[in-house]
Length: 242
Ligand code: F6R
View 1 (cartoon, rainbow, N blue to C red):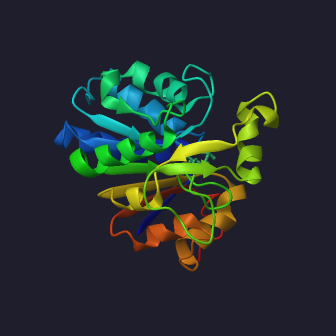
View 2 (cartoon, helix red, strand yellow):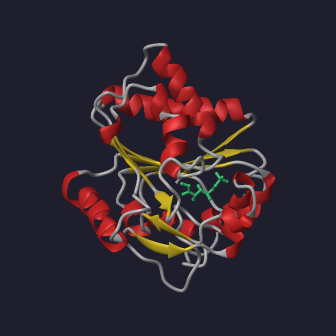
View 3 (tube, rainbow, N blue to C red):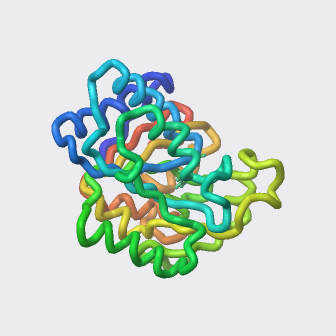
């Protein structure tokens, strides 16, 4: 695990975007695993700048997002499909049909999960997966539990996660209670993983995830078993690492 700590968010964003852009420059048909939430936004903004300067094209890339709420209309301002279109896809040259976000309104949600996993197992392997980190150690929406699902599945969101995400909605009652998420097994199949974390309030969970015991109580600690993880931290998030 290669842990890099940055003085400023600008530097972190440039390095994160630089890693993604170099991959797509050397492998134009790269498969990218993407995250939503506040953490990756600065990296997506840098990627858009690189695209606008003509340094990188996403015409042949494919993307798979980690997760999506269940029951929010696709065009709801807080759906992860809307997030990705607005924060990245609408500003670069990737054809939308090459972008994948689980469909949280599928008539058969179990089938949607199986189909999503089939795409990732049978035809596409993720070259580079971007992850943020939940305050409780979740990655994707894999919440702490006694055991973790390997493949894409339906998850009941923990109250702490709904509270953390309520900042994007008018009230906590509007935050969905369920989501579809790639499983930890699917995430760990990516060839390379970049975990990005910002802010002092995540310093303790960063320490547990990276230097604590490998346990399903901290799903991100399973990243310690992956051979190719780069961790990008601002200095606040890295503040408790020894
Ligand atoms: C988002 C996702 C989540 C977030 C995590 C951190 O697709 O899978 O695991 O990365 O909840 O969220 P932020 O970045 O908003 O602090």
